[in-house]
Length: 470
Image 1: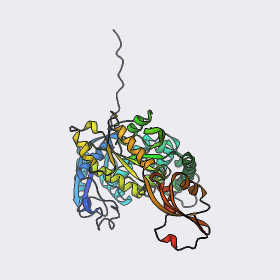
Image 2 (image 1 turned 135 degrees about the vertical axis):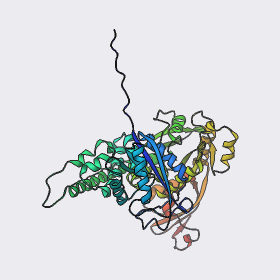
Image 3 (image 1 turned 45 degrees about the vertical axis):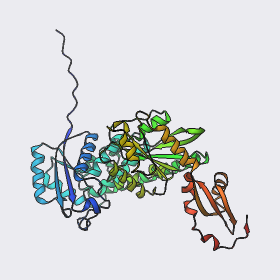
Image 4 (image 1 turned 90 degrees about the horizontal axis):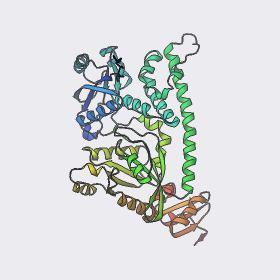
């Protein structure tokens, strides 16, 4: 009789219970006067309803490998100073967590260190407390594959967890989500000074590690800056793909560049920026850079840590904003992206919007109707290729055919910009002065950002005596 071979089984996923809070007025005003006194800042307007935000949190939990077993909601004037939710809700949450055998409780907003400590004390040692920020950091840690990505995620994790460190190093190591496999390096503890506690040693080691990571990332930033300068010298315009997570940016780049970038129907499948050359109609070219997807309440620690990567967006000639038009919250997701772009200093870069996934719409006419609600937009399907020729033609027009009037005062040390204006622009005015040249005319829209620091208002150019006019 043949021996039965055991079939490998998938280990059970951790059970997660979700908690969401809606502050009265937060969906429209974005900031409640009581939130700051509670030790928590709602700096952004809530773009999604509580129900939709919890549904997104459930997707994040699934991406992180957790099984959602229930949820609890509460409406408040302001967060409780000690436990974020009211004391009665804490009691209810404890009972529900025990009933559903939940091992993790995840809050949809970022908890203060005090909130986390009190909730851990009240809910017991068998339940871990996470917030939306910690969950996103864990997902980033799982998806970071390059050395740059792992450095950025590790820095964000340490800066988030440092003020929350309440015990021995094992407390942080248990929750940090791996940090690219490096977190153990901070755990090695040397000799203590007189009266120095383990917690103080841990904090000192973490601060030392944070300083090291920042130095390493400055090297990455400098390298990226040199690479961007080299690309700009090639005179090939750079298009940065931006959008809400899972909007289809990588699929679109694969389509237009005939590339093989990893794609998946899940949140934050792509973290590391990828640049590919794309052919535009008429023999023109552009460099497309795929970037990390955005999400509402994107952790500020991640924005700071991913500074080098996000500069690929702020230094681009044009942004291609990919919107999943089939998503029921498409407009809110688009607004969230614009919020994040403003926060990272990319609000000045021209934008073309690609309304993606029209193949998922039941009514194809809905795509054409949606275009009317999004300025400078085109409807496409990255999966089927529908609308891609129109999108590429719009990109060519925006990059090579659309000219913008400018008046700039350029120091003679900015010889590269002076030459660029002569080569690519339509010059209408040149006035040489002491130490600078005043230039007016029209330049391609893709180049405007490079001249922003030197722009002057009409009329200001008359204030200085000029030695020579031409």
